[in-house]
Length: 172
Image 1 (cartoon, rainbow, N blue to C red):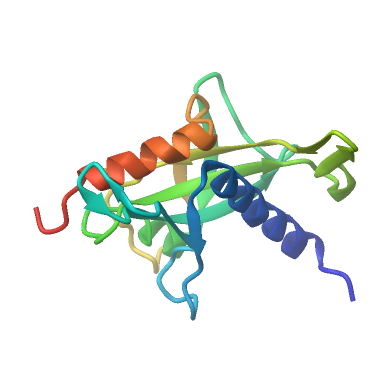
Image 2 (cartoon, rainbow, N blue to C red):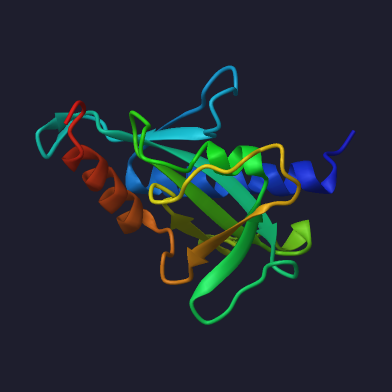
């Protein structure tokens, strides 16, 4: 039985992040069971800036290109309240980020390969919600989140986010 379109899209979005993390030389771990609101913990093997094995957590969301709302500066994503609350605020042990993967409308366009390359479409973006307040989950509607268009997720971005995590001393 094939995956339904939403499962397929979500699986591709998570695989997109795994590919970027692997290209950056980072570890990827999934929380089991999935009860803490993060999809992955990304980590660096060894010491970095005086911290051993720095890490951060991410929640991955995928969005079909035709549904994606954007202006010159931001993707205008709307999150379920529960998911938003698992990213908002500054009281987490590890830094947390939303990774938004913009995916093609049709799954055959997800990748193109030839003997010399694999092209993975479209692009991922990141945002921290550390400065946002949690919302009442009992109210209706979704929470608007502005994801900067300039925050393209790439291997160098992931390494920069890991370095920022290393600079954040536990207990300070």
